Image 1 (cartoon, rainbow, N blue to C red):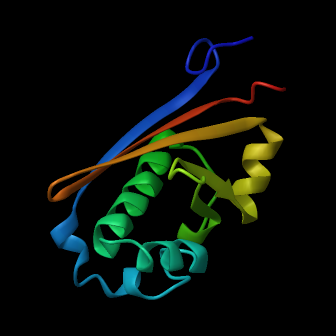
Image 2 (cartoon, rainbow, N blue to C red):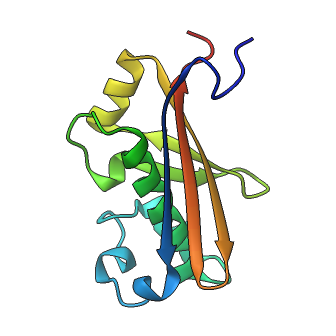
Length: 130
């Protein structure tokens, strides 16, 4: 078994966002602009929707930094979904999904919130089952 991030690491990206910067960001308050409808609904259902939006945006920015050479894609081609206990993971669509599949790549993500900031790290690796 290959350990995540070992010899199969392709890219690593991180991003930090000020939650206050998102309070009036119109594109984040409408589904399917930057956030998918599912992401938008998830954020609207949390105790701190703007903080959640900042975290998801940071995750997408971190992924773009981890993949500097990629096809043109939309913000909504990368989606954050949450497991039962809140663990985030990426779901891809469009040209980005096809490209990642053709190269047998996968992406892992971690999102953290502290006070007025949201932070995310994305790790892109060769798919372990490939």
